[in-house]
Image (tube, rainbow, N blue to C red):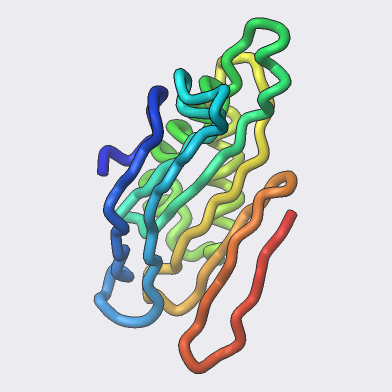
Length: 160
């Protein structure tokens, strides 16, 4: 996986299992499957994503399609936010090793939005594991959501 979404037709990637750094505890099972609406097949839709296997961090951004009415590609903003998140994840992981995974996810997401230079807007969600693989942190902006599935435990749904 190249780690970030790109424009074009539907994107299909083999799911990736992100092991926690010490090979124990929680794991993130990640996969990307983008099927744009029929009128968006030329651009691949307005979604961007990133997967950072080293930091056990993932994110998705859903660009606001209404920007197309102004001649602006909404995918460009979503991709830039996710590229900013991908670039920030290792730095924040190194600098903020004692922070909670939720705080790390929030900082990664903030850095992603700070890095975007294109015009646009987007909902977004970033999730990351702590270094022991024991806690999952999620930062969410807008109406994005995550489904957390646990074997033998309570499943839960995170929404914005």
